[in-house]
Length: 426
Image (cartoon, rainbow, N blue to C red; front, side, top):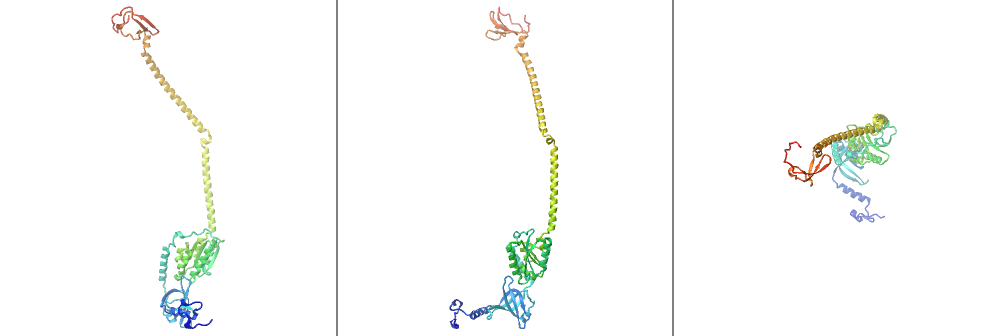
């Protein structure tokens, strides 16, 4: 392939083609020219590497983004670095005022720092508080998002530092409570620039393991700066996205990183996390035995009470002699029958007495009684009663009704004058 003279090269990137490309040197020069036109900028990050003990007059820094796996090389005059009011070292969060610079030979971007300032703890805490409010407004800390912890997990995921005391505390206390518990351990950086990506990756990996029933993130105590990664937004969101229950056991009881709020359970220490996740099996067995004993006693007491009730029921007359209830009812029926018969008889007696009295009164007032005393009833042939002698004529036929039988009479002569009713008959 023949070299192309500068006058034949395309003037802009849009004019390039497979037949007329730019050489690397030209692209690098154009990038350098573009970057050189950029104004100085304030950049925030964490110092992960600092080399200021070299023979040159330049200090070399590596500035890493706290939320992403990305870093830039920074150069700064040693005298400017020494003039900083608050000394900075590896792990410090800083803001750097720098001019972007593109190095042609390596084709790499770097920053030429003019000023560097450490971010104070107060400002870091203020940022964490602001992030806390933002995440709370999204509902990431709500209680209804918390997952319940398993009662007796068979396999526990443990995210901890390499050969850290927190790892020892969790394992020893957990196996002291149940020796058959298994751990899936991920040893990661628990402070510094690699903490966030390594812890997030470990949580994601354990969350994908179907045998892991709960995840413990354990770390001992430390300074505010050491625990800052556990309030990092990327790490907090990674834990919030886990489908496996997560227990936060970071720092001491007084330390409260945002990880404690997003986790499903917050333990004050790694030891407390082990005791919360793994129950004391001997103690649980003792409680089960005690519960069984209480249940047995309760059942025995209930059975005895029911047996006493059955005995009492059996001793009742109706159960001792089932015919008792029928006999008592029959006796009552007989008493009712006798009472009814007596009441009827009394009623009939009273009615008979009343009827006898009425019969006597009727007999005393009846015409037959009068006839029985010797009187007679005279009637004309048409049946009209003879009430006065004035109406009788000689030769008139009459009929006399006696007490016993009747007589047909003929009036022989005219009746005498009317006699007084009080005069005796002749």
